[in-house]
View 1: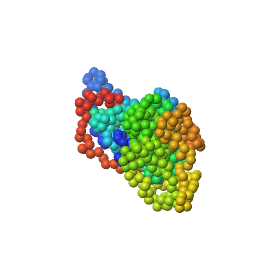
View 2: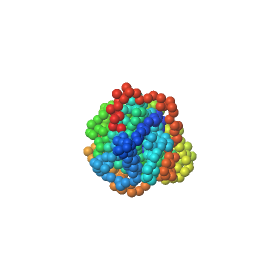
View 3: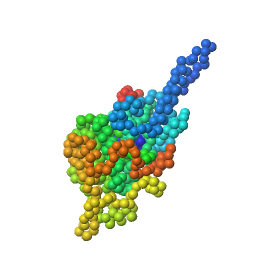
View 4: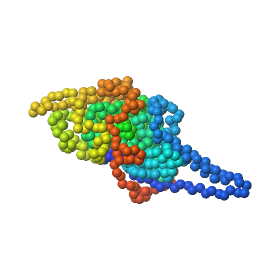
Length: 485
């Protein structure tokens, strides 16, 4: 979806349902106000005054979202949750219209939304000229037909509650018209972490640790400050900013649970926790399971549970065994010299990512270096073998991928602090990481401004996509549900 909106344009095998970036933008019709001539008594026309006041309020609104584009001091999690100044983020605007934005390029599509790179169409200042956004456009009729009304509302409400966190996409404003709902989000020019992972085949341990640690800080905030379960953690939903830090996007499956459980089957097959598949009720612990699967994918190059048939994926997950590969070192080095996908990796079934020489040079990755090895043995042919990932990483993955959620690290009495205290993170300065005192290990190839070269190309919306309209009957049934936009 994913822009800071989630442009998760991925293969069907990576998505269970509810793709959260989608197909279209409808044209709105702005009002044109008539200006009556003043009478001889020179009293001002009330309608003219109202129009001027509205224009002024709209100008202030545009200035506000443009000023939020500039960097500001990082707030603590408690300040984000409580500070009144932050609450203006994510507010509904009754003044903004689609005509107030120039839609420059599609950043991602799905089944009921499209994410655009956007700028203000009539900037009044240099600050407004520099304002660049990800505008997520959701067609009401598609949201209703696909039964995604509650997910869309949850996404909007959750994003407003968490707006301002350094590693979560920032919802600046929402607005709506007859046909569509709109979310104005910050623009993350680096594109999906998924793209860099597929390009590198796998991340080395320092890169994996850096991004895993930033994800831990996100889950700490969502779980312990907001009581929210994210429920769709995967590399497609993680974007990079210009400095190589992550932004979590696509909150369509997020739900405020507190300490309760829910039973909705949602997410992406490879990352579903056993309790979701068994429909025994699940809580925030599902995010720690997905975190372990994601860390495994960072280090190994593919999720531990994969099959073209989702039902077989579910069977493997419920089985509870995390398979760690053992690969001959000579094979690993030859594979990386050849840059040829292994026949048994399963990567050929994943969504391909674009790869350019310039982006490789600027990414600061070291894909040709094998993961750090700490244990060695030999197979029956006498070849030197390596066990990877390293013991600390393996220990963390097994601790968070425990089938019983009551025994899962991160969901125990000590909460997320037990994850942060794990040996794998022993050298992490959590405070410095939260404040972004250093750049990330992957620096996107971004020239500034409206450069969107880190995103895939998408076809423009077609007239056929706009044919079905939002009806009065739909408005009677769902108008109230969309009122908060």
